[in-house]
Length: 493
Image (cartoon, rainbow, N blue to C red; front, side, top):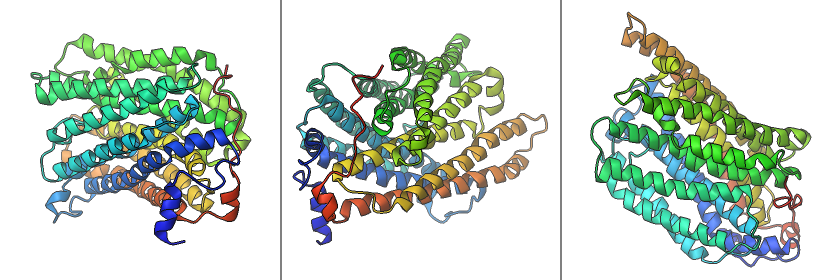
């Protein structure tokens, strides 16, 4: 079968063998196959693009002359492109793909309007492309994680409303009227992002706030992108994958409500902690510091639930690609929250506030926690959508170890380097040139880490497109290769 034929056979909803096993799940999978594969294709390509720009930005910190002849590749352009493609390109698409799959599977009914979902996600990704081009041309805004030009905001917002509408209709069409934790987190992420994005655009772009309040809004928005969008989508994915990959109920599921409400309460205001020592009322920053430490309550609950579940079946983790990425993501989340709490302390902020420490923590949260969880989910979802085995388990292993090794090096270089940088800057006889020279080893270590992550991203892309375009074997076409774990969504306790 030629390349075009293989591609069409991968996207076609009427696949030979789909109805022979797991008929109900197959019907659901067939209904969402085309839009879901489109979303995952976009996310995986954006992952590669984001990592490339991140590596370029990192190299420029210790080798300023790198690509200096290209005026479109200055540090002031590649660094915001890295963060925005990482968030709005890779992680948004990956989280959305997981959300669509979870809403369809947990809802228990084939979903319609797949074309509508595909169109809205295509518009979203076109807006991201326009935003990247705008930054390259110098039209960027000066706000963290909102650097896309103002003319991209309406396109992003309208396309997001379309995505949210589809997800709301999918939730309403569910057969099982009892709700599961994954559904709570998905709906929270969708409603929260509509709120924080529109509020930030109004107060920073449409009708800009005055003075230091702009910085406060920017810090609030950036923290909530993680706390109220990316993290909830990752939590939803973990709650679903644990029963599915390990065949057990989530440990302590009855306490999920406490974790849910406490996370929403504290995460929504934790961003103001970034304004400690800033030109705002002291009590505002203090509320943020208290909220950051308040997040340790849901973090403790998540740790008990997720680690308790994963470690109870530890022998199965290394036999399952999804579970391996899952436990790496959970461990990254715990470490991330500990560093966030440390960084919120007033004494700590006096050292790390203007260093690369926060950048390292954010990369641990995005590359480590969300990236690992969403990647593990894709390795669970794709074989079920395509009814194919992984073409090369070696590539899957390569991605896991390269991504993990890169994450460790990146965090050591950025987080420990950030603490060192802050201490040097605070010295009474600080020489900025000496500080920069001292930091070269930390910058180089971070660049090495991103190089490993880039290797993992390449392996991920090769695995996905190889799996998508390869012909289905006789065994794959005639039977289901996937043994589902028991349906535990509604019996978890």
